[in-house]
Image (tube, rainbow, N blue to C red):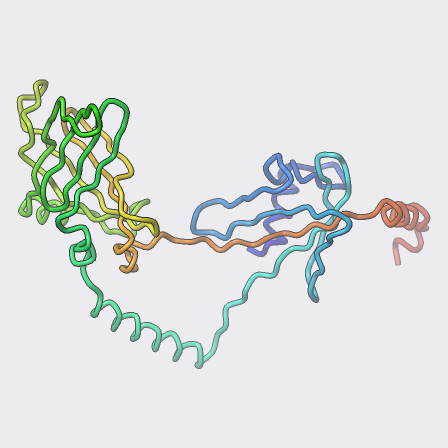
Length: 278
């Protein structure tokens, strides 16, 4: 579906009897908005430009007139979509690309190797009364700290369990089907839970993030069973953990000057039925 078809379908759905299209009826109710049906599809952003700073369109761009919230008329230019190439040269390029990607995958480090910079490091996150300390391949603790360093209360959420981790990761579903891609470590045999009578456990989820390594969240999945999320920049070196970045297109809209707008209206009004039919 082309951009023009997308816009046309949105216009038809929202307006059935008006001759002008209002931006608020297609896009979010602000001057600049972004819309897309899901993360995999291109995102489209509309930008209304002032008269003294117009967009200069290239050749053969489709356009349509739209109204902003104040009723001002804009001429909006729809960006071109890239057309896929075809032919024997494209096939050869695709095969070459597959070979190169396969070669890269064979040389890639596995997630645990990419997490080695965290070895012998501990990360702490504070959430209200409690602080959570994660030590890579060591322990996860829930602490209440006073006077900066004094530990007043402490619970162990678990110790790193290599066997449980291996078994857990073997059962994980295909990485392409999950919304957020992560690698898990399982920590078991924590402090006994008063409510269940069993040791506390925590699943540590490592995610790709371009910023520094840090604990970003702690969630209690069920009674005394937790999920702790750790972002790690080195994990981004593996393509399976990289976040998908959707393609973004901008629809530029130039304000139609009042004089030009009036001229256009006069031309339409003064057009004879015979001229209109020809």
